[in-house]
Length: 167
Image 1 (cartoon, helix red, strand yellow):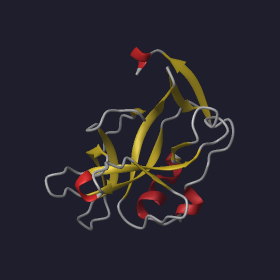
Image 2 (cartoon, one colour):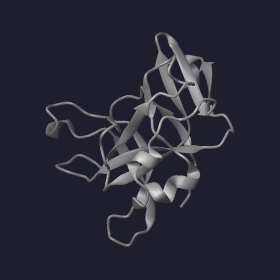
Image 3 (cartoon, helix red, strand yellow):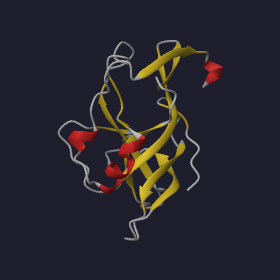
Image 4 (cartoon, one colour):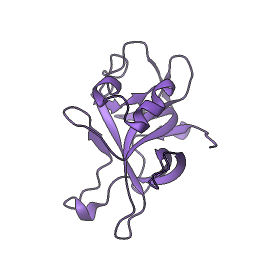
């Protein structure tokens, strides 16, 4: 499976696609890297396309996926920021996928957690980070959500301002 983590723009336009990693739905237990649309089908959710789901009080027993990213981008007021791991490694955002339905393509939502100390001064939530060593536990559901979906500790991320063209 070729993996080339890319930036994830939290303010990307509707219809944006991104690679996700999921367990194949054929029952083989094998993983696959597929392209999916970010956001749910608004026809089945009162006309709203949901792109995030809060982790608190929820379980995700099926359709777990990972979004491989090099960083995530935030827009706060008139400023743009890049958020990377402090060690420079890529990471995954936890997500859940939805099958193709009624002409809507394979889609996913990003699971969010309360922002950690590094991000909270910019926004109150961000995507739940799954460490690379936790990837299989997340995909296979062998570890509970409560153990994997937590607010990162301080000094996990480095945040830098970028110009709008750096998106």
